[in-house]
Length: 192
Image (cartoon, rainbow, N blue to C red; front, side, top):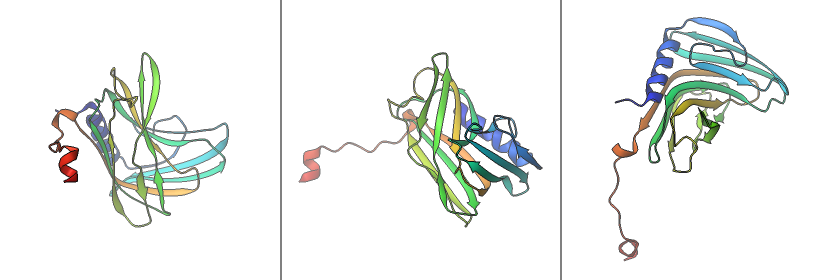
């Protein structure tokens, strides 16, 4: 059985793959159902042009002036929950006009409010088309554990001029119960 986040990410990937459009994105307005850019309009101006067509899920070109505190692509992951020990993985095939990293977080919104869990690994991009994998082992202290809530994957884009082509994107969840575990070894045995 797939995790709800995997199902939502697969639906978004399919929607982007079927889309052929060019648009100027607006903050907090979906590009397509399940994908919403957001930026700090109080401290900066962002122009984001998005193109989607054969061979590219999304071609993003941004121009930034001022000092926006954030510039994020939000991917809706639906309602669900993660367990301590789960591993969340994001695999992206992309290229850009420069080298850099995108930090990511998962925002969980529930009746108790919203909370962010910053993912341990980033997605790296470079001028050469390449595939990058980021893994996050869910810890008991991560805010995305606990009661089910609406989940959103936030990909933080650089707050500078950037052209980024996203050719493919997958999200997977390895449940804690299904994760292979290496047998434990007493510390005294390791030192012998």
